[in-house]
Image 1: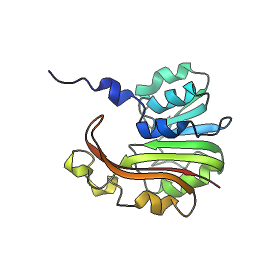
Image 2: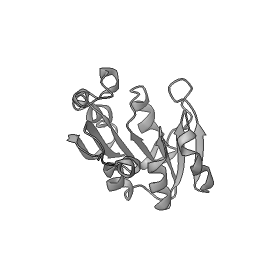
Image 3: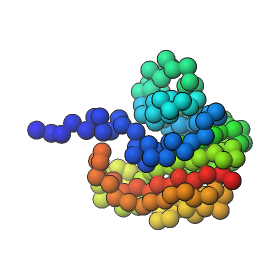
Length: 176
């Protein structure tokens, strides 16, 4: 009998859950490439206002029922960046990589804003998709991208087994 990983897959990332309590209350949190909204739900439950952005919001339509959620149907890779500088108390990015956004991410954070970023890294090709190096972080790439601009709170490069085997890189950093 196959194991049902649906609840694990739809659960918030343990990395995001670990640091979500550090997000400043009062400002907007942007959930980049929100997918089904698993992190948006976590953040709303913690009292945050969330802008959930994705180019396809079909899996997150139920979020429209939350007063604390703004759904933004937007292709971040083909349009102009929709967020003003220093406008976000926090930004969440998981399982998504578009390197031209690195500078925009830290510029969009307000002072004391928190970036929580987690995505696939080189080594993940052993487990499946993504395999293309264009969509895999190089060793230390998140530290290199954000270390000069943000105060690093935590960083990991690690293999994980749940919800499915993967190799990921993670960072939590604050704008000072």
